[in-house]
Length: 253
Image (cartoon, rainbow, N blue to C red; front, side, top):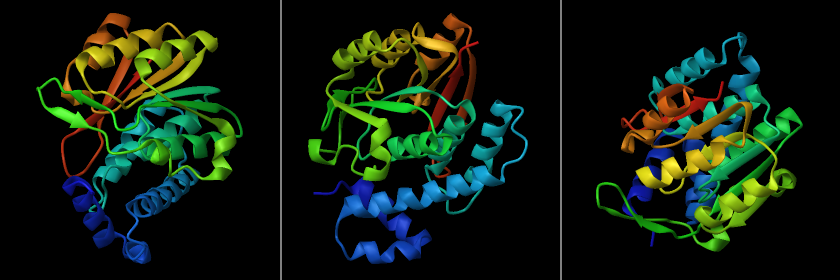
């Protein structure tokens, strides 16, 4: 059964993207969502090809985010397109991601790596995970093992290693194997304890100009406390035109 939240997203998608209407008749929610994100990925690539002044990466990311937020039909591509730009501009060799679900962020990262012609993505995902949020609400994941990363096409999987398991177990093992991480993308359990723990685990492994990219940072103070502790440059941006939810980027300097 498809959650009501995703049904509302699906309706919004079709209202503003009538070219995706044929996918509606497949009655396959995964195909609908993946087709939507592939369309937005094409938008990201087109925007990047037309970008000119990239001397100030931070300002460029802010400008791109604001431009998307101001579009009437925008949704959370304000998050994903900024992520694509960041990967293209920073040209990371090693990227780690926690939290995959259907693989929208994986799709944008992997295409950016492919367009850079370098880099590998390690993604850690715990399908159908559940946890209690900081506010006491029980949150439940929406993907099964077989649909984890389903939006990533075969053509992009050569640069990808998908690890299914709990990040509390898999992240330390992965960091021990890798010598250095250039970009860490965090989008799994959104509790203060989990966010701080993952930031701390990764930070000592970050390269000199490494970056942490974290979703839903407005839920708690984890990113603010960690940025002050490590004296990292921080920017906070909106992820969606329709609500005030935010994501954050930390630059190790």
